[in-house]
Image (cartoon, rainbow, N blue to C red):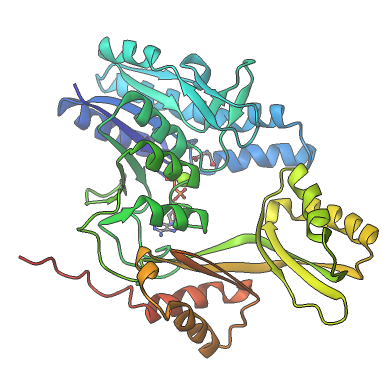
Length: 411
Ligand code: ADP
Ligand code: ASP
Ligand code: MG
């Protein structure tokens, strides 16, 4: 029998009523002849609540114990769904990561899945159970509970689908697919029928949190077909798959934003070999990822160096850079957390010129100043003042004609 993995996000299991609704979907798939493995997130708001409890104690908890706390939400929703299924006459068993096990490395709070023992799951499926698995969590080789980073249940689902050789991984959420931009900030956003792994990867890593970036990396690497769809409405979703002939031939397929970034500028740094290495080495050693980097041309032997980090790393990064700045004789270090990165993404950019200038002109027309720019083959990102985020997304969405009806397929 074919296996299907269904993942339900926080809103979809946000109340008992909603869990009952999920159970009905699971039973429908089961009665259509599929073996069903379900991955669940914590009930909406629960992970934030758990993090809040930790924050009442400290801003700097031991990562192992942090994972112990924040992984707990998924245990509850997995159990509740299994109970609901049993109550509806469908044999179901809930499993935590360590019971499978889903083995990860030991990088607490952002662990990576290394191996999944599918034997335990297959055994339960054979016995006729629906298996409900707590997402977001893993266990390292020493038996410590780990978590996969915010939004990590998506990655649990894709990794399980790949390990089990599932025919499809369905991601059920509170929107009915992947849109040209976040539908909660622009009503003209349009749902896409299909999107390539590469485009989805860029969109996710540039802020479209509908899928965790790592889940898309995983899906691409192991060729897992991903279908993003609504758990509330029975409508067609969006398929994330290999780029193919049928995909829309557009230059730009989406606009994304990320408000969780911060900017650090090192002012009047002596312009000599080795300086950038001195500044960035301590950040790397602390596991802080640097995103965009801009260095000004030096006129009098001094230069300004500006870069962005994620907002959660800002305080630590700022302190580290201030220390280095003193050592290398820089004049000052400035920080700014009220920035956002707005990006356009599209595989069609590879073969089209003029996309960047259209983006810059569109922002200029609205008086939006661009603070930093970065590009890759299929994306262009601009850092702007956070207060312009929504406006920038909307005008770019309009400028690239994303709201238009899909091009009709030839008959
Ligand atoms: P879940 O709890 O089901 O994992 P998330 O909140 O993590 O759900 O992701 C779904 C949300 O992602 C949507 O409510 C939507 O606001 C947001 N989102 C951001 N960008 C997009 C996009 N391009 N297409 C669809 N949804 C998006
Ligand atoms: N519950 C976790 C979170 O809120 C994981 C997930 O929802 O995917 O980040
Ligand atoms: Mg999510």
